[in-house]
Image (cartoon, rainbow, N blue to C red; front, side, top):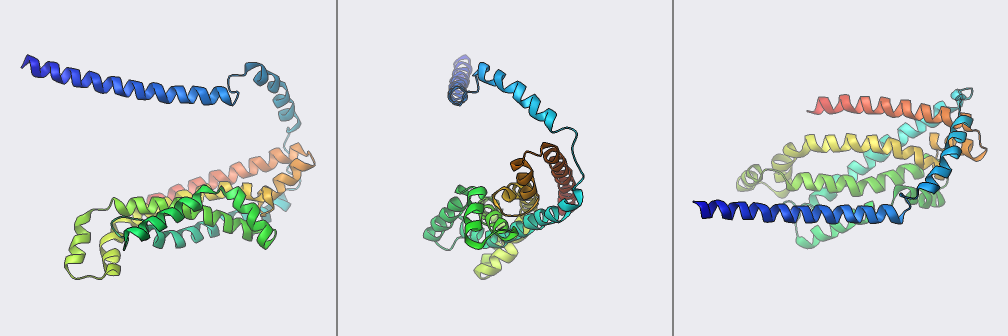
Length: 265
């Protein structure tokens, strides 16, 4: 009995030692990266504090005199986020079923679909925005395309993970009843993953609304375009006002998305 206890204690100690070594390795990597980027450069950080306070002083008080001119860009930003998310969900659903091990028709198709999802989310939406602005011109359209394509990579991955974690029993029952692959998906898989898909889509819409403000900075329209214009001519009081407007809109979008998530639970 004592020997068994000692063995269990020794195994527990070895597990703890391994976990401690892993944690130490992670902390060491973090510290090296922080040192490399200058996060521990106290003198440089101290020099930037007066400039930061000076800039904040120039931003006060916020100037809301042009608020009427910001209504349309705000609507453009909202429409951009909704359209980009809808585009992403529309393409992510079929890609997700091809990229999930339990629904893909062939391992090669699985690898190709996974590769496509990896490639789409590897390119930041800001870079895609620059590319689409050069391709289709200024306005909300390049922002929608950039947000949509980048979101496909992330939304499709989350959809595929949700599909892979479904209960196998309903799927096997649908197959045993002689259902076609499409019927198996409709009756065995979709009922299990629809709430998760709705949740993921709403979270992505929240993200896309924030990202769409950045899209304006590369010429893709929206409130970000107004923000960049004020920054270029150093109208910092206008900048602070626009930032407050964006903060208010983000808060409203978060509250609305939270209400939507409750309805899907």
